[in-house]
Image (cartoon, rainbow, N blue to C red; front, top):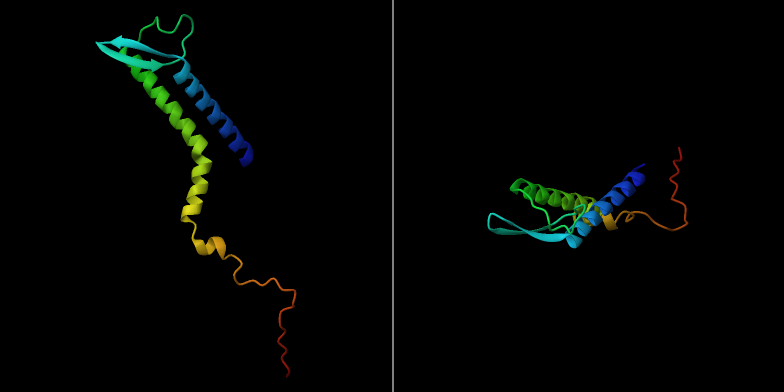
Length: 117
């Protein structure tokens, strides 16, 4: 069950990142709002993508959604890497490398103590 959930989350993260990357790479355009040039990118249906306008609220929403999408995708994608890295950094060396320090690999039986009464 855990492996299936992990695979599903990985696929969802990969899809989110792919959509974000495609949206920011292929659909960039500029707008002039209140004398300031705004360069952003997003998918739009119909037209060449530059023949539309945005309000200030729409620009802020596009920026917030873009930031949210990349944060979620990066968190899901790097979750496993971070967990393994933290295990290596914070696991004590004694626990990692000396697990079998007191054990022997010989085939000899343990000594027997006999009590004679």
